[in-house]
Amino acid sequence: MSEKISEFFDHQTNANKIDSLVGDLTKNKKEKEAFKYYQLISDVLHHDHGFISDHAVDKIMQKIDQEPIQFNNGFIRPAMQNTLTFDFKKYALYVFASLMLVGTTWFIATNTNDSASSSVPVFLAEEISEQLLNDHNSTTTTNPNFFIQANYQADI
Amino acid sequence: MAQLKLVEPDQKVYSENLEKKSKVSMSFPPTNPERAVDQKLVEKAQKGDKQAFGILVEKYHKKLSRLLSRMVRDQSEIEDIVQDTFIKAYRAITNFRGDSAFYTWLYRIGVNTAKNHLVSLGRRPKAMNEVEIEEMENFEEAHDLRSYETPESAMATKEIAAVVNETIEHLPEELRSAITLREMDGLSYEEIAEIMDCPIGTVRSRIFRARDAIAEKLKPLLDSSGNKRW
Image 1 (cartoon, chains in turn yellow, brown):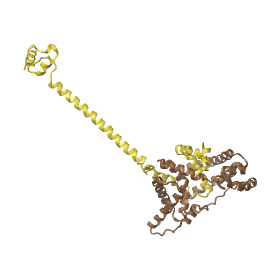
Image 2: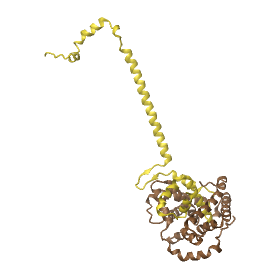
Image 3: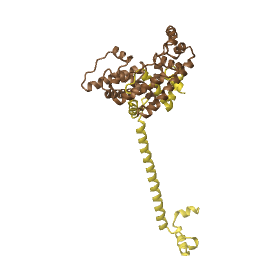
Image 4: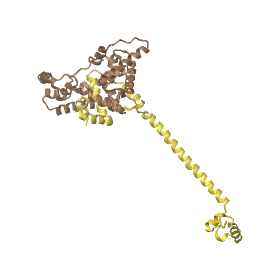
């Protein structure tokens, strides 16, 4: 593969292969490193070796990495670092809000059940006294729903 | 600073073919392959690929430094200007339409950045017309940046140059000739194949093997001496 990068470095690659090679070069770390070595060798042979020991490219690329990404269509995406921070904050906030919602729901549900169970007595059939049943039946006629349920047509 | 000793191709073997080559060189296509490659990298950068722009930085930062050293003498100032130039170029990359070569566009940004830098310091920038800028772009005679280097970087530079030259000297003759004809004489693979009387594939392989051998020798040096450019 590096032989192709060497050829590419010399601008001897066929035009129809340039696209894929540029893709490989930008994605494959090993190929990129090979390219950088070839550039260094070329620089030395052309006496372009001023600043060889400096980290000029690294410094420049660090700055570039902080730049937002611009696209041809005018769309601008924030720099990767900022995007990650923003996403993390958003994600953390979302998780926190979800937990709060679940917790609050659980708390309310628990308390509501407690109060309901304490205010409304629940009896087994045999525990209901006859007097209580009589009282209940004597008041059902005052309940209009009773007549509807019993299919009763009021003679008005 | 020790002068670099450049390895010469074996003139006895190839001089005759080199003469022959000069007669056929006009038959090669006029398209500029370097420009085509740069254009692809620019297109990728325009689509948001910062790695592609990184390759352009790798390719041109030294040439740009050398160019700007004719306007600004201080090394740290040159570094700052080069950095600003690339950032400006990146910010404006979507506006680059390929009417000129990428390096021409980049160099113009660099020259303007250097001028603005000098004005901001109250210094008078050297006035340059189009012809002068073009001369600077094609400036092949090495301007001695080494005189502005720090002692540490000068030492590292010397070591790296020594390793490169020593490795080339010890390469098998066919590899040495191939890499020298390519790097020093700037010949295309076709031209080298003609001179060395071998297929283009062999030339490609020889140049690659020569580079690989030199890179292998450089790796320990770059890994150990803190000269990591990457």
